[in-house]
Length: 223
Image (cartoon, rainbow, N blue to C red; front, side, top):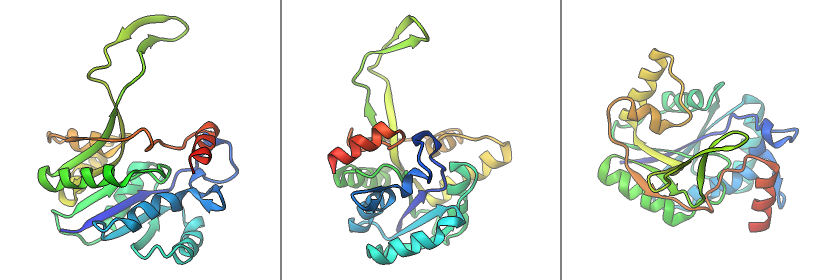
């Protein structure tokens, strides 16, 4: 069984207000995506990494691969309009056994702890899939300008990545979604709508997604 990481990195990152996609913004003279890639490069369980990205950045990824000795990067392919398209392009570009594990991770979650990654992989190996989540710690409400009601948070989880599925299952779910013209914000939605159970594993507050300039400031302070 192989463990293949898919990094959908085709996003424009417009919410950050930078002139380039946020995954290529430098922090301490290193592109944000490199921090994410190094997590998987260092993990002995990972066999290879595939990156889906705008062709404009192919050369940059090649330079980063050489500069930081990211030897597990096996393919750099064209990303799609949406995250779902980028992941599907990656699945379509590789040859894998139906039981190989596809580990999808956001390019801009640069602080994924190794123990969180290993726990998710072990769960997926045993149960077929795993989605990393964290529990809600704040009071949750419904409302716009005023509080309308409170939401019981005991059963509320925040979904993170990585999300891990067997190649055959994820490809089937992607093809069904494309046929139905259904677009989801993550892979777990696609697999769940095929009728399969999706397993939850514990994440970490360190594994946050860098989306805004405030997130960048937090990341800078942590590294």
